[in-house]
Length: 575
Ligand code: ATP
Ligand code: MG
Ligand code: MG
Ligand code: MG
Image (cartoon, rainbow, N blue to C red):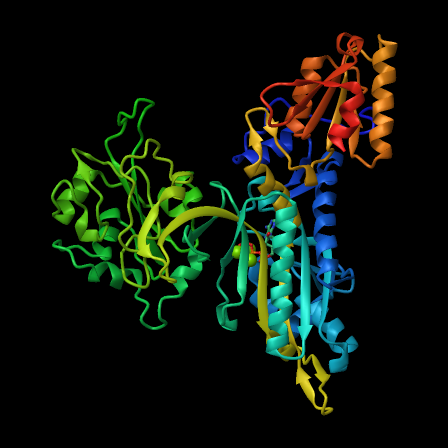
């Protein structure tokens, strides 16, 4: 590709509403363009990355025996009424009417449609197992679309659906998808973790999320660094014995401490109505300046509802906060709870010291609020000496003192971005839609199903969260928009430079290298800044001066400086 034929549009500054680095860089590098809330144009440079991600997914899905098809974006409501999801899904499901007043939905996933296909097409056990997948536009009317394509409303997902004759065979389909997902994210060069996730009403242990590790991730993962144990914190909490699971109120009240206060007291102190959904306490040091000195002598004590997260707390976006919530000062809390300065024991926050009028716990772990066995994590180390009171980033190294459930080490917490999800569905949809096949004895039996999603566009953003520096994006080769960029200096003036650049370009192209020749005639500084922002992994600079000695300059995107390379060796070096 030649730059003049392509479309390159970079920005010096990111728009003000871009909070996370991937959103900022995708906007600045001209990968996406906002059309509405959570709705983006995928611009040519960004689309190249999306296509590469899709191709890796497609190759590995095919390798694992899945079959590609394509189901419609607009789906008749009838199928969704069969499973009850037309009503149950609530406002996240976008419903539309056609000119005849008939109901349709814009698909957020495709269980209903694929099950409808299966019940018509898969009649005999001989046709099973089967796994259908597509890579298709999805729409979810997210309550809070944000972070660019990370949590968009319209986005691209690969969703696969397996159909098996029995649970055992469905387990094999599940394992095959799990392995395929590992290969997919390995090939993309991402650092990720497969974590156990909630199975809800389905039960069992066949639900795993693939989480790309990043401080900006919306999910919290609890894992054991010395074993394979890893789970989404939502699951770790849900795993408490059913029935035995205390409400936040009960768990607070039961903490064996010398104080007199309960969760109701905390709520009363904050003038907050206490509900069953309150599940966590967040405690954080207040503002400090660069030298670490406290600017405001307060601590925050927040009761966080189950559907909020720390990003929102930090950004002050919890509605209740503006509406009747207030911050309690450390002095108030000490007085109210009758605790000695040095301990906030009565509300179960073990080991949180209060020094003078502030807490030295400069970070918060929102799952450890009550220290209730089998519900909250207990014995959490609050990392008193951490320099930055950054609620979002510093949760990473929190060591939850609990032993891992497998007994092989001590649990730790980090944040992740859910890029994929594999899920065993059992007969949930086949039962609701009567999707049966005839077994060996000619008897109808319900199909066992699994569903397997990957957020294509979210994966692109997640890769940037992991690969960037102050100058821009750093792509892994496998999903870079271009693998190599050739930057000729003074191509319009020098015949030597022009010839060398075009020859090299042709040679690399002939070898199948995804190369771009920057023939825009930009000044070197501007040209280099663009490609560092866009994140092309390999750059070759051709200039008169170098060519006189038969040399070019090569710089990998992660390299500190360029190195000289003989022009004759470039092709071998890059292919
Ligand atoms: P989340 O918990 O982030 O809302 P989810 O569990 O609702 O995701 P799934 O139904 O498991 O999502 O969908 C499969 C995949 O689709 C997710 O793992 C994620 O990568 C992607 N995905 C889901 N919602 C969005 C979104 N709003 N924007 C971009 N990608 C998304
Ligand atoms: Mg969701
Ligand atoms: Mg999720
Ligand atoms: Mg999910």
